[in-house]
Length: 371
Image 1 (cartoon, one colour):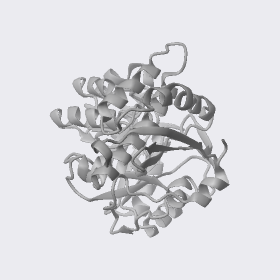
Image 2: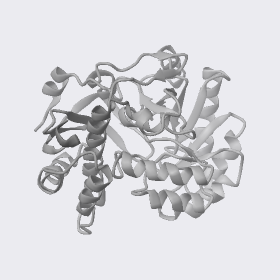
Image 3: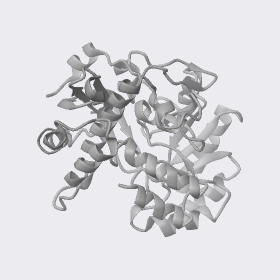
């Protein structure tokens, strides 16, 4: 490459909006579409770094405006090898206190991921190895158990097992702790003892309710209980739930920074940190949270986003499970990524191609593009 550089010439942003087969309902939310953003970093050396990021159906236009009119002017002409510098230049877009900070965080994350992909291509290394290379495969789980599903939970678990996953993370918090504990008991009976089960309340309960649930369900071999408590006192409440039983606690996806994750760890609130790179500034910030987690003996997870999470989790010794969905809940991962690896014994092998190594289906992009 000329002068050994990787100069950013153009940043291309592409928004997709893909309808789901039905509405998916958690404790306090409902999903009808998935809406990722594909970013392509075009460089003067001919390398094009790309990645898709996020699921922001109602805020797509605002995020695209931040990428196109605030981030791109700061990065055109910059050397993409200087990842930390590029990240720092985009950070100022999060300083506007009069708009939702997550908009700029998602915009930053999308660009940061694509920059890392370009850097991996330049070095001819997959990112899981460039970021540390602890292993090249991960156990895969599906997220399911949504309320109002047409399919019974035992059938849903059967189909997930047939797709080859190692376990499921099931939604709770939409009814009483006793009713949800009964649901999870039926799920355990249907799944058998060798199937991983997590639960996720999506911040639905007060500590008393969460503690009631864990005491009813603590003999069901639950790998983790995610976001059990309402958001407004999360560190103290999570700690109280964590110390009330042997069930491990997972949180971090709702944090905006590595510092927010550190506060959870300092407060003895979590066993797993599922910080989301795509919601909070990108792989650069996620890796900072992972470094902090290692010093606290906290395991790292990642909220959804397998296209990014797989490389991050595989790169470190304390990475855990790769989260996916069934193809109806997330049509993006199985359809946009044309070289998505098949599962074997619940595990996914990561690609050896440079960068993220994913090949994106151009016909799928054209079909669902909205900008």
